[in-house]
Length: 374
View 1 (cartoon, rainbow, N blue to C red):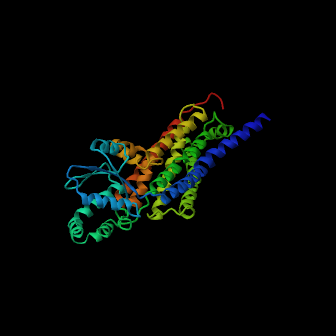
View 2: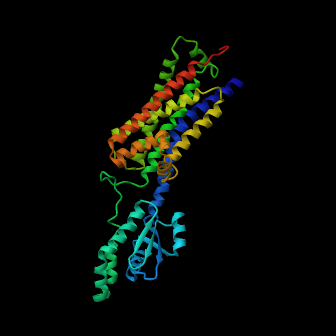
View 3: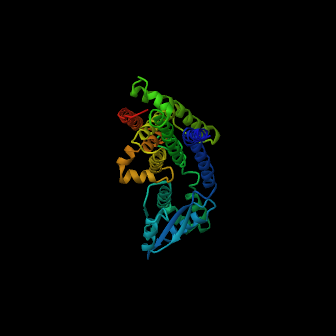
């Protein structure tokens, strides 16, 4: 009875490691992302939070122009008036995308370079370019002032976020790239389970395998190959689910995306075999280490926050070069956004080198294990 209970527990643990984390969990996360971002798209997502600081000689025409943009049915901007000190503090706390200092000549201050900041810059440029026309309209045809301003501010159909290659991009796609990277790294659960199957002190099957004359490197490579094929199938299922069920548009060439996923899957499996072969830690501890490594890497690659990857790149770029999740997402960006084949190739080579290093390290760890009795 006790042996049966232990067997059932081992089967449940194996199912969690081989099925739930590498396959089911990413599918659940993808579904939650889809509904969450769907709600965001239905909301007033395009409204740009803006602050106005009036100076003594504030341009009344520009103030009226901003008021028109705010009250227009497109709700392009939402304007709040503050003092200079309050405005700078709000901008630092990211409560607004930019500050218009309205004097005789309006000026704009922004703290970033996203689509919201670009809209504010475009509004100011449009006003400056059409200022004389507005002044003439106000002097000779004041009844047409409102219509003139609306014509100048019709940005809801003109502003479009595109990649450097001219392809329209979805601002939420970065979360799905990070999700695919996380799914690739979760192949580590399968790899760790494989590492247990070749350590004689953990299972009877492993003990029998270790007494065979098969070379340890061959055992490691065989386990890695079988685990990789299994996990690559998991990632392909996720890609198909995102593309054909959730209708996510991936504009890069699909063969390139499959190549990234292939090497990313190898990266995850090799990482799992390496962690599984470290020391004599209990399985629960190794699972905790694996989760900590994969989730931290995914977080830094932008899984939970759109700005995290860029924040790391600005302050600690070496982390993005060594974080496999960030390297995988960077490869996706190269084919879907940047159109940068050199950077794409560098990302793939980096992942491949990491796989080789982890595989050799796993062999060295497992080879030197010696047992008093098996």
